[in-house]
Amino acid sequence: MFNSKWYVINIKNKDLKKIIEIINKININKKFFNNNKNNKIIIFNENFLKINKKNFKINFFYRYSGYIGGLKKINFLKFYKKNQKEFLKNYIIRSVKNKKIKKFLKNNIKFFKSNYLIKKIKNKILNF
Image 1: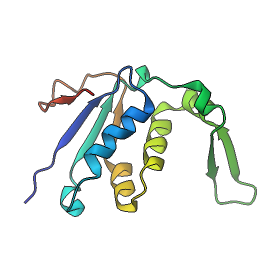
Image 2: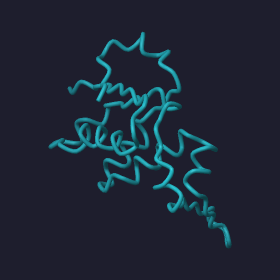
Image 3: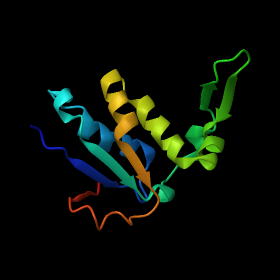
Image 4: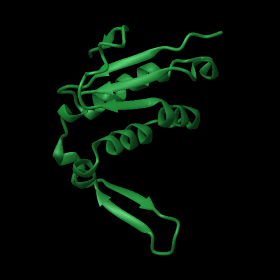
């Protein structure tokens, strides 16, 4: 049927806004989104990400456990220091408005700290 594509993105020394632009270029202009469900996005060198601290002092991340009084409020910088993968995943998913694409991103984005899997993947690495 349809061939699945793997997008491998190097985010070394990139800004968060630039990463979101790259992922939106991959996902948005798809006329038949149902055919592209097998596509994977791999992001590596997550520990070399640039973060502008002025913008993230104000923003907060909210979690709700489902119980009474279970709403938790965490500053973005503290959340980033705690768990980088979850921070990046949530930040990318929140930037997308389409619900189908959000489901796709939750299941098909993978993060790696180093490029040890790149030798196995023979596709081109997207350097923007």
